[in-house]
Amino acid sequence: MAWWIYVVIIFVIVSVLGFLLFYFQVRTEEKQDYTVISKDRLDDMASTFDILIELAKDNEKLKEKISLVQDKIRYSTPSESKIIAEKDRRIEERISDLKLKLARAKVKGTYYGCERLLTEIELLIVERNTKAK
Image 1: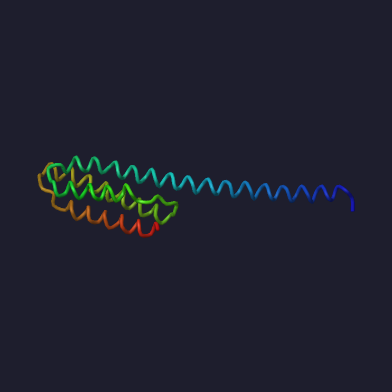
Image 2 (image 1 turned 135 degrees about the horizontal axis):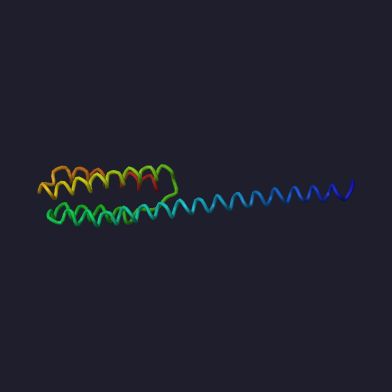
């Protein structure tokens, strides 16, 4: 066989190995990015609870329960799973709903329904953390 055939075969093998190495390196970086995004999302949710605590400062029982739920979020494990990301979005939606409900409750002076919504958020967090393990 001619020497140029060996060169072509070696070139093809090196090219395929280089492509595979690059492909798996990019996939690894994407997984790390999902974990960072999940961590940031959890931090944002936990910081939103500071606002909720301020809104509920007139109701000590509700304020304590908000603090407990905030701790559950704060100590949740970040995950790169799409299922967990969906759970996080649902939790964020419920937190926004609670924020609006607390703002209305502060004006009216009655916190009816806020505890129910907070319990729902707590259950979503427990469900999320169970699936994250």
